[in-house]
Image (cartoon, rainbow, N blue to C red; front, side, top):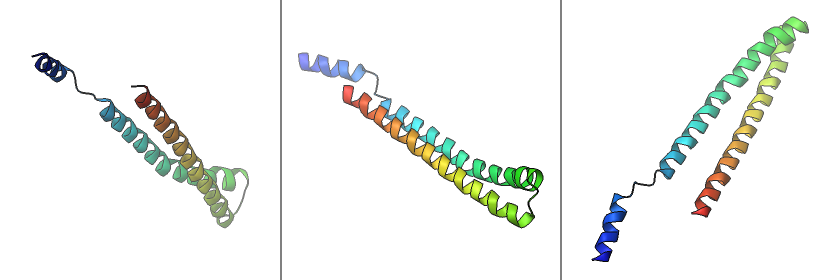
Length: 101
């Protein structure tokens, strides 16, 4: 009889949504960095080409393409490094929370 009562109490317990919230958090992080990976390098390319290299430094169009591309590549690497840092910390945080249960 006691086993049935324990089984009934366990059935009434709310489900564990930690895995779903973890999945939602991971998806939000991934979508955020996807948007950054698209917008930051493209935005920096055109901004630095027009305003910095051609405007402020007076470079030719051909030279400004080259240097703006270098800025965009560096921006891609920075966004990727930030993503890896955030993903590493999020994974270790979830591991610690799971370890404490």
